Image (cartoon, rainbow, N blue to C red; front, side, top):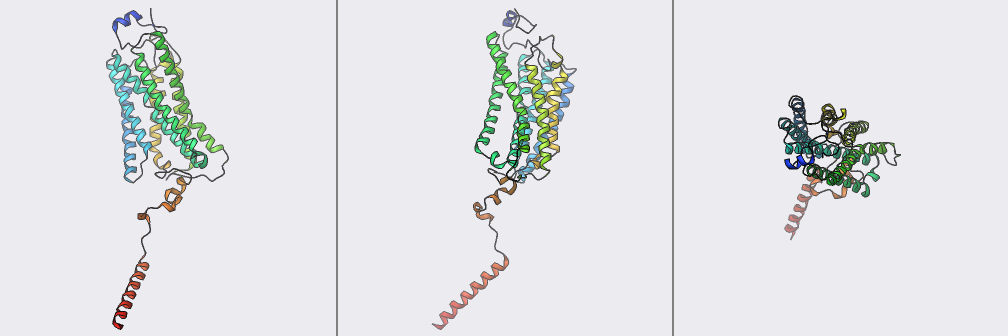
Length: 346
C-alpha cells in the first residue's frame, strides 16, 4: 500500500527503512541536482552575501552615529538565513538521499522570508502613524501590530514542528493533521505578506484631521509609500504562489509545472533579492529614519526634545553666554569691594 498522492515505496517498505522517511509527494523545486541547482544556488548565495555586507555596514554606521536602525539588522538576519539555506541546498544536491539534509533545507527555505514580512509591517505602521498620528499611536492599534508579530513567531514554530514531524510518521491521520497545520500557516503568512498594502492605502486615502508628520532624512512621503507598496506586492505574490502550490498534491515522479526549479527560484529567492537590494541601495534607513524612542504623536516630525521640552536632562541646558559670565564677575567684584569698604569703616 502506497501513501495517497504518491508513487513511491509502499508503507511496508518505508517502515523497513525507518525514519526519517523520504518525501513521497512532489514539492516546490523538487530534489536538487548538482548540474542545475549547485550553480544557481552559488550565484544566489553570492548575492545574499553581498546583501548581508551591505545591510550590516549600514546598521553599524547608523549605530555609531547614535541611531539604531534595527530593520537593517533584520534584513542582515534574513540574508544570513538565505546563505545557510542555499548552502544546505548545495549539500542536498550532493547527498540527494539524505533525508535529514532535506529536512534542514526545507525548514531554512520556509523560515527566512518571515523577516521581510516583519520589516514591511513595521514600515507600514510608520506610514500609518505619519498620516494619522492619533490612530496610529492608539494603544489598540499598537497592540494589534504586536499580536501580528507574535502570530508570525507562532506560525514559524508550527511550520518547523509540523515539517519535521511529517518526516517521522507514516500514520495517515497524523499526516493529514500535520498537512492541515502547514496549509493554515502558509495561507496565513500569505495574508500577512499582503497586509501592508491595505494599511498603506488606508493611511493615504482616509481623510486627515492633522497634517502629515513627515519623517526620515531623505525622500518624499510618496516615494516611501510606493516603496512599501511595491515590495509588499511582490512578496505577497511569492507567498501566494507558494501557498497555492502547497494545496496541490502531485506524485513525486509526476510534478506539475509549478513545481519546477524555475518557479522555486523565481518566486522565492529572486523576489527576496529584489527587495533586500532595493531597500539597501535606496537607503531605506534614511527614508524611514525616526527619532530613537518615538512613542507618541509629534515624535516623528518634531523629535522627542521638541515634543517634551520639560523633560530635558540637565546636560541638555544651554551653557551661559560670555556676556552673562562677565556680568556675574562684575557683580562678584562689586560685592567684594562693598564688603571690604564695610570692614574698613568699622
